Length: 269
Image (cartoon, rainbow, N blue to C red; front, side, top):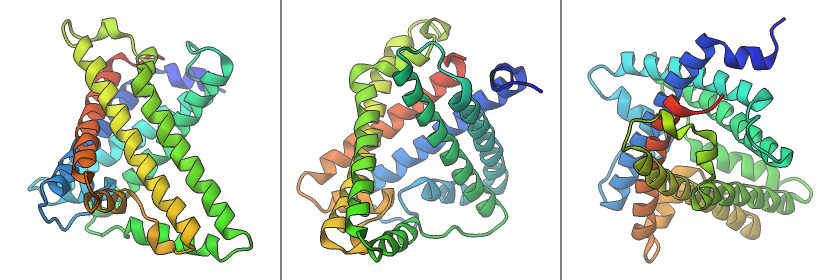
């Protein structure tokens, strides 16, 4: 039986996984577009999250075909990230740091599956459930448990910690450790470095805002205060200087997309 390392290095897994990374980048381009709409105050029927990005694709003339392409790509991306989570990042040391990378790949694998399923749902003409409502329902169920506020508070701290860790990768440029920069076309390395930094910082900031909303729900014992990316961005828009932060996040999503496109070609392993 093939080991996880052998599966990871298999040419088919590499090709499909890297193609999936391109699809993951496309989703972040669409997130940048949706966030920019919030920045400029344009009303949109789509939620400002991954499912809203898929809804944008569904509205295009070739929507169903493109959604199937995205679905297949995202499932391939999920498989690649899953095998990286099991046996990847051998180039990273110390071991604790390597395991943090693997946990991140595991989380991306789950995201790939969830968004891929949503893409299939839209492709067959269905509609996806509201992510804010689902999170608020879950938060409400946890709050109703003994010690529920503490549990939700811990969840908020974890989410904020994840956001900080993502942003830290941008600040320290540690994402470059996963790339073989020499494989990128001449003259693009600096752009990948600069936009990648912006991308990780902006993406991390968006996750921190989600964590803050969960924290507010814990403090107030009100599940309606929590929500996903869509609620986080619209809550930001209503705050003083919120539009400035939203602009940073929008550019961040675009920067992360550039990183994803570069990783499709130059990611190690």
